[in-house]
Each structure stands twice: as structure tokens, then as C-alpha cells.
Length: 246
Length: 273
Image 1 (cartoon, each protein chain N blue to C red):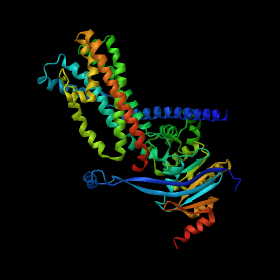
Image 2: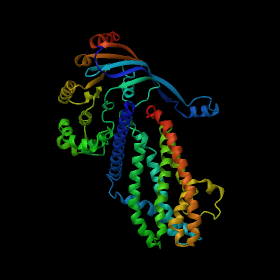
Image 3: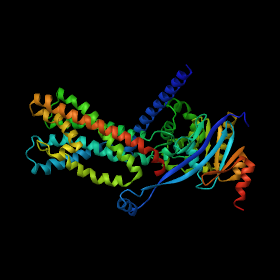
Image 4: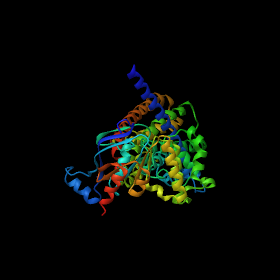
């Protein structure tokens, strides 16, 4: 273990959100208290997370809804600045946090590929070069000329996943949103993921389905209420994760 | 030596990032322009129709009330097209950071890209409308001269000022959605508080002095309107330089303030989308 190269190392990560107190009454209260009360309150999402992910491994991230999985990933990707703690990243993290977040529904698939790939940091040259690969992989064929608002959710997921893979990231984050695609495409994605892995890409697989994680991951971590409850081999973590439901 | 190497690497890294940011702004601006009039039949013409409609109202209605202004149509038009740029830009930019919440949640890019792209697409749109409007001004008796060229630096200042105001609104709008209602309410009020369709008193009263928009509109007026009638020398040697100085100071102040506010507030954007 000690010789393994580290892809991501985070220590003592603490992240909190500003939560607005909604409603007129709060603004009134705020004014009446002459600024003594706060309009925003801080809510801690991550309470000291230590995590180490090695290069080339498939790392599973388990946890219930609202346990802080997405926040952790966003923090690792540099989107949310942490309050405390340090992050070390070796390589480039692919954005796959919300599939299809950047899609502009009024525009065609091709226009969206140009737009989203630019947003994900590809240069125009790179986009031109990988355009046909993206279209091939998505299997959308002639539909790429159609407006995205006429796409089904599965088609959007295809488009989004194809674009993310095209950015050739060092660290790929796969969210459970993949499940939107049909079985054929899911299998294709899995094949692509294992292909990328052989090329040395680190995979972070996020799910609350421990079966799936057990199938493809080497190690896993269980995130509970903003803390790592357990980290280790996938079977160990998967079993303890299951126990809580029994 | 080693340190220098790291430094150079850093600079290269930032350069390449800057280059992709530049490309991003370009691509998003083009997208805005493409999307703006998709599904609309008259498309780009709307940008012309709106000010023309307002112009017609002011020329036909206000002319009855305001009769101390020479060549009133030219007076109104020269102010109106620039005011329109300001109000449409600010009202669009206002939403840009919130609208892009989905992207900003999944990709690590500076949020300022989206307001900036909206400004650029609006500016391109505006420059395109300037051609027919200049023809219309010519029809109303406007004759270009060397002084007209001063509109270029004036426009640069005005655009920067527009952007800084919009950026501040856009940042606060993430935290309090009230800003949008507030601005929709306040824009018409600002319009009447600024001498766009009437002439400001010769010794501008305190309100006009405090209203930053008035200074910009007056500067544009000097260049596009007053240069047509008044004594050249006084305008060139006194009024225009003075106004340039005032607007420059306002722009420097507002731009600094907006960037400061942006850098302070951007940390909390993500938790408020």
C-alpha cells in the first residue's frame, strides 16, 4: 500500500454552507435586532474528512442522501473552497457531478458539445478533434442536430457522459445518475470505465447501491453525516454499510 | 533555479487557463447571441423596435411639454439608445450567475465568466443597432465630425460602468432574489431621474450631481448632440474634458468596488444556488 501513488489526499476537510433564513419575518427580525442576529447561518456539511485515493484504483463512495457525498466531491474538484483542511490532487478531475448541468436545451446536440466541452476546459482545437468520437460514443447519430429539449433524459445522459469521457481526465467521477441510460448504454459506460482504468485513470464511483460498488470497486468509504464512518476494502465497508439497515 | 522553474511552470499554467477562459467567454457570448432571438420571428429587429417605439412616444407626447430643447428628436435619440443598452444589459446580467448555478456546481470555472459573456453579447448587439440609429440621427440633422470619435472612449467608460453595476447586482442576487424585483422597479425611476428625455438644469442640482448615470448621459450628449449646436471651443476645452474626468473617476471607483464585492461574495455562491 505504501508504495502506491496518491491521486487524491484530503486531510481534515471541513465545509459549511451558508443557509439563508427565509421569509419576511427574518428580515424584520434582523432589522429590529439592529444587525445583532444573523441573516445567514452556517451549516456544517463535512465535519473533518480524511481520505486517500490511490492512482488507478476504483474507489467507491457510499452514503445516504444528504450525507455529503456531492459536497465532498465538489470540494475535491475545487468547486467549493473548504473552511479547514488540505487537499492534494494529482491530475485533473473530470466534472460529472450533475449530469447535463450545462446543457442548453434550446440548442442542438452539436452546439451543446461545443459549449459544454468549452466550459469543461477543452480548447476549440481539442473539441474539433474529438467531436466525431463524442458523437460515435453517444450513439445519437442524426439526433445530434436536434434541439436538446426534444431529447429524452436517457439521451441527455448519453450526451453528457460522452462529453465527460472526451475530456480524458486523470480522475473520473461517476455518479449514480448514469442509471438513467438504457441497459445497452450502461454496459457501454462500464466497458469504457474499465478501459479507462486500464489506462491508469482513477475512478471514483458514487452510489448508495452497495451491490454495484462491490462489483466494480477495490476500496470504498462510507460517508455518514459528514464524516467518514469507515474506509477500507470494498467488502468490509459494504457489509458494515448494510448492517445499519438491519 | 528550481524555484524559477516552478514559477515559470505556474505562469504557463495560468496562461493556458486564461486562454481557455478567454475561449469560454467567447463561446458563451456567441451562444447568448444565438439563443437570444431563437424562436422569435422578428429576431434582431426587436432590438431596434424597442427604442424606436420609446422614441415615438417621447417625440409625440413629451414634445407638448418640453419645448426648450432644440432638435428634440435628436436629443432624445442620442440619450435613449445608450440608456437602453444600460437597462437591457443590467437586467440580463443580473440573473447570469444564478442561471449558471448548475454549471458552476459541476465545473471549476470563475463565475464572472457568465456576466462577462452576457455583457459582450449585449455589446455586440448594441454596436449592430448603432448603425441604423446613426443613420436615423443623420436624418434628424446630426452631422459627424472629429468630435464624434470621442464617443469611442466614452462608450468604453460607459460599458465598464454598466458592467460594474450589473456585476454587483448579479452577485447580491445570488443571496437575495429580491434584487431582481428591486431592479425592475428601480430602473424606470432611474430613467426619469436621469436627463435622458429632458434637459438637466444648467447648474445641475445636487441630485443630478449625485446621480452617476447623469454624468455619462451628459458626456454622450456633449459628444453627439451639443457638438452640433454650441460653440466648439468651449465644449472641447471645458465641458468634455471635465465630464471625461468625472466619468473616469466614477468608472474606476465602481469597477474596483464591483470586483471587491465579487471577490468577497463568490465564496458563498455555491451554497445559495
